[in-house]
Image (cartoon, rainbow, N blue to C red):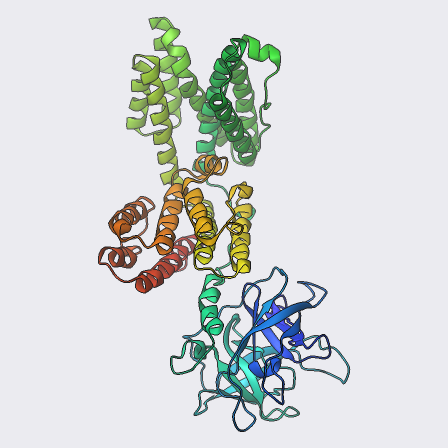
Length: 601
């Protein structure tokens, strides 16, 4: 086990979630672990007065040093009842602590359905003292599971359940980040007779009377389910089709940027400023800069010098595009082959020609227009685009009227994107990116749901921190993800849902340019499903079900992946059933992308 999230002495915390816990810093009371954002699970007897059974008002949690060097104060927010006779507390002997200041940490998932194997070996990590007066550093201890006691406790043997180990998470050594139980008592603190542990399944046992916060923490814990680790994006090769697609769009974006700058310059000279035109110019500049970073070439200047604006910005941008074509040929020829470098440059030039056609072709003579069209079709054929795409390019070039030609150029851009996206979709890089993007959307939407259900602010902040972490992994402008921690709960949930659905620029621009239309479908599905949990509008059931079904098909998901949640929405199943199926749908999406990426069945 790692030691980044546990609680030492409920004077503290220590492990990926074990932590040391102590009363006002005096010695160690026991161990605990992070079970939700800012919340520590430990034993009730650890944080209660030993003579009266009354919970302490406050304890100190001593996190693992990798998290924080100083103790953190925590309130005892829930405790199960003390014993009325005897020493051993009745099942489940659990307490929940809430930190009084922020601490960035991971959370250990609770495995309520997993059974322990009789005779199997399991491990705990806790803060048993090694010598009088020493502050424990934390250590593992192994136990053999002998079976269940009559009252439900797990009976452990062949290990020393020393003082200070109470509240330690019990795990399978083969899966150390999944908690099965909580060490509760010792049969002899000085020998290896073992002890007892409370199964985490007790938290959902309807026969036990538990404080509300202890039951609620199960849902909070489920939000922090540990995702299957993904390799770093830089370790995954980019598919050639993604490079060709971005090179094409860099050419078309440069052409349209120059055209927009030319128009804006003329209007400025006439004293007619336009905020909308300036937004488009900023958008195209951002597309060009991002594409150049992706393609590892030098980006064109952001703003043109006055002389270039005065002559013709379109001509200046065409010059930039031609210079970049040379860079693309050299850069990608060195990375791959000379043939591939030439194809990347060709894709760039095709995008440039499509981008300038609406502004240029209508003003050419018939002979010049025919020659330009032949050159355009030659580039499309050289890239081995499907015949229908080549014919569409010819139809665009042969159309009459600048507006009709412009519409045809945009439509051609979309068709080229879809063709390259289809080729790239099965590639590891694309699937890894979409899986990471889904996780970003899921965490952000859950933050809205948590806010609408008036969960702890730390949970909302923690989820948004996770969302931004996934966005940063994709090198996205994650500052554009909306906040949901400042507003009233309902307003915050509305803002999160609708802002995510619209995806503000430049995030939207980057996503579309980098990954095509698939991200929009993923975002739509995520925001609509979680959005329904927030607003529960029965009038939207059919439209959401149909939209999810249609977009899952466009993403290449198997028919049965959305089947259950779609059927539940359409058949009017109650909120609780739909909520559980939305949770399962999230897991299925992760498994779909992960299984393709790593070849698992």
